Length: 159
Image 1: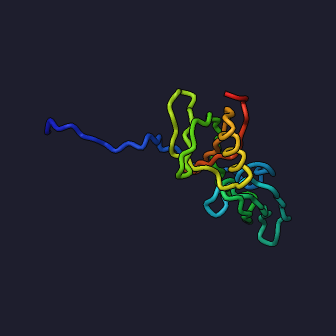
Image 2: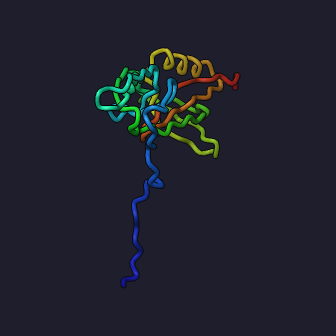
Image 3: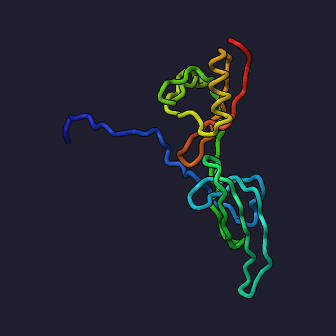
C-alpha cells in the first residue's frame, strides 16, 4: 500500500432519498405528490369506483411547488406514489447582488449565497422594495428534490 493521501469529492449528501412511497389512496388534498418527476402540492383528489379489473383509481391534480404549473396523474389507489420530502427554512436576508442572487444568513451564523431571487413578480418586488427601504427581512426557502426557491417573505421590523 502507498502512503499517499486519498481525496474524495464530498457533496455532503447522506444518500437519503428525495422521496418516500405512500399508498395513492391515502394521499389527501393539501398533501404533496411527485407528478412527472416534479414535486407538487395536491389541490384536488377524486377516486373512481373499482372497475371490471378491480382497481379503484385516484385522479390527482397538483400544482408544481416551484414553477406553479398544473399537473395531473391517475394512479390505482392500491399502488404506491412517490411523495417528496419538502422542507421550509427561514433565513434572514443580508444582501441582493446585481446578478439576481441573494445572500442569506443561516441559523449557524454562516451565509448561503447560492439562491436566486424568486421569479414571482409580486414576491420579487416585495423583497426588492423592502430591502431598499432598509427593513429586516426573513425569507422562507422551500426545498424539495434537490431544488430550492424563496417562497415567502416576513418583515421583522427596521434595522
